[in-house]
Image (cartoon, rainbow, N blue to C red; front, side, top):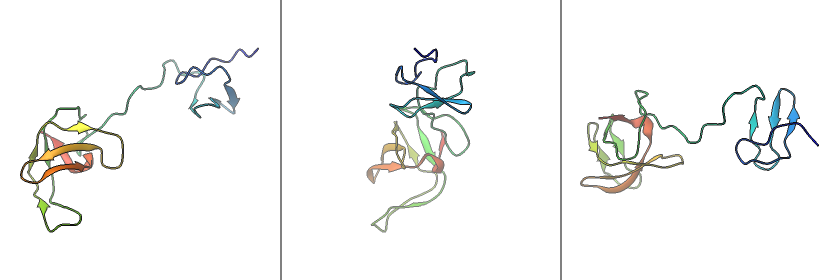
Length: 112
């Protein structure tokens, strides 16, 4: 039997060493055996200034954003209330007043 620890992400018992790292064959997670803590449980979203965003926050758009497929623009300074954070390229789901539901990138907003 192997004396290697189970994968901290998926608890797989079939981990193996690859150089200085331990690797899980099931979820492909790699970690250092000297790491004291488990992997971070969630992604951290940050605005353009580096402030951490959370679901329900109010943010302000920092520059004019052209809406794809239309001639409309979301003006810089527009406040967006009650955001929802999601994984993906556009990581904020929200409803912009006067325009409707859409997705924004966190790099174009700052926390209000």
